[in-house]
Length: 502
Image (tube, rainbow, N blue to C red):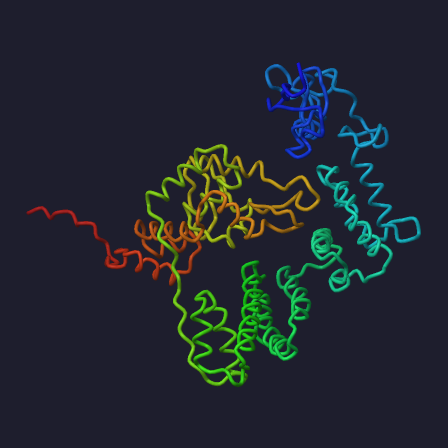
């Protein structure tokens, strides 16, 4: 049999022994090893050597790379012919990385060398990070991260004391994307104190962005606006609760739109002092999406006497396009029945189509919000928790037991329902929105259609409480949807029993 016609003995997909033929495709389709059962692809081998539990043959708790005839997981002794996976250094069973040495031991050695403070030992302040990182479920992923050329210099700088082991000190390192991930790992290991993540990233982004504004006059105005309006409001919010990614992204968008407005004035030979009503109207009429962010900047300029007192048009709120009930039900049916859709996408879509949850709130849900009481599954979105119907309950419980991004050093113990790739962080709302876009599901339209349909079926106060909506918001949406629940008098409408004649 030629290599191109072979299939993996575990998953049944076609595999190839020629690396060049699979280099530009999915590398998991390459034959990783040949066991007595046949060729095994890279993915199936990786899953096999990371599976632990009670052997279906001898009943001993150990590594279970083998599969019996009835599908039972077997240890190397019971399966036979799979090789020896016992590390000669630590004595534990696990995937080999070097001859006789497991991946975790190799990871420990390399990480210890990078965190050496010059005395032959790990810098004491970084020991919690060392212990948490080397304990990741799949050490090979940590080795891959350490092999990137920009990671060792970052770790050596921290270990050698080249930069202070503080948020400000870590923020001076480059490249910034790798530094963000490293700082999240340090916070998760309690090496650095927790901070409001998105506010901190915005404060770190702002000086670099202001430096790109060429006009010194524009830069001065934007810096004052950012300091005394944007950051001031965000810090006030952060004092009560952490800001989310949506607030931080809106702040960046506001700063960019404000800079574009100043550039627009310059191109038309105007300044803030000489700006007239016609200039404002021309700017806002060119692109209606500028109205809301431009209004915030323009009002600040008027209040602080940077602009003359001009009239600003009102911003019309867009309630979102209506998604028909038939379309909504079709999306629900697809999410419940199409097993080809990733479980993450199915649960995400159903949370919107059944419970009208915004992405910002979905990202903050945890596994503790999924309640199992007797034979019923409940979801804590408000008060009281809302029941989960059986078709969705099965999908949800299966997803909770098999959440993604749980095998790296970032989130091995994460409680988030949608754990992200950053340490201690859920999936970003941008990633969630992209998943919905790939399904062809408009997030805002679906949520609008769902909440309006629910408000037609139950009183606004009940829906608001169970879904976590503000009562006033629910009442307003109910009126827009044409709900008639508010017209019912609050009384006992049961007919009294007929009086018998004496």
